[in-house]
Image (cartoon, rainbow, N blue to C red):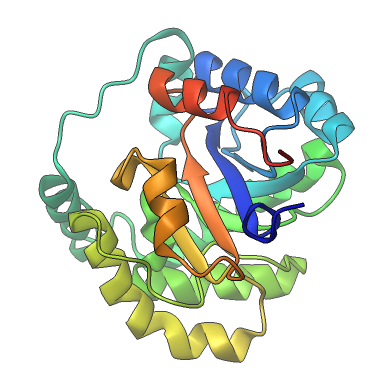
Amino acid sequence: MDEEQKNIIISADDFGISRLASENILKLVEQGKIDRVEVMMSKNITSALAERLLASKVKIDIHLHLAKNELDFWQEHKRRIEDGAILRGIKFLAKYILGVTSTKNIKKEWEGQIEEFIRVFKKAPDGASSHEHIHFFPPYFSCILDLCRKFEVGYIRFGRKSSINYSAISKILNWLRKRNLNKFNKSKIDSADFMISFDWTNDLQLISSQYDKTASKEIVFHPEKVNEFNVLGGFNKFN
């Protein structure tokens, strides 16, 4: 096995966010194309879906979120993200300042999601991450670390080192990573060396050429998107 391919972790985000996302991820999982699946808990995660994921032996992580009011709608409708990264960031901070998404409220919400995951999957998550990377926000990062310790979750999407600055989002996450790094190191929770989202470049070969082959790289895909589903459909880790 090629050393680089051995150190690539393919993660599929947003299982449960829509019917299309779940169906596409299951197809790829059952073809052996994915290493980790990030599950967004809601009533739409049925025991049948859980059984298919468990049968695949893929790592099943919880994808913590603040989208419970949208998940039902997105099951039957195509998602559209109309706001840019900056505008979404402003809206996010406004809700936090107003107390709508206070640290206390978020911790309670996320704890409930993990408890629901355990009820459905009959085990703790293998890892933890969050929708739109909001766990990188320092007050929330403390929350997710506390919850990982409480529920004995051994892996977190973070990255021990900063990735290349491909986009505004990757720059922001690298800035936040530096502020969270001390907490992460003290936690002793595992993570890949680098975390890179495929949609920052849409070029798997470019990503492959830019990092040390011996470094572990978690590459994040959103198979709900046609182009990302197709890229993963043609990718074979074991060639």
